[in-house]
Length: 103
Image (cartoon, rainbow, N blue to C red; front, side):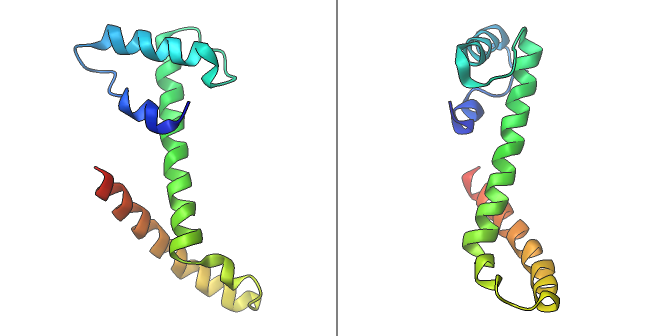
């Protein structure tokens, strides 16, 4: 079960609410998570958590690979603080561009 497949079946507010809701409920009941899923609202709540997790992973991917923050690990602490302050903003912008490119 991947967050990408969950995003495909998102949008619980459509007219096909019953079909999607049944699918999500079955998806989470089938072992996609260790959380107890008792109803459709809980399944929708878990989808929101997976979407947030995807955003965090995208940000750290941009920070690690796009900004190459791991190359700074042997720099003095004062320089590291300033570099991280700048690179976090840059990584956030890169992640936003990546997200917009996927839409």
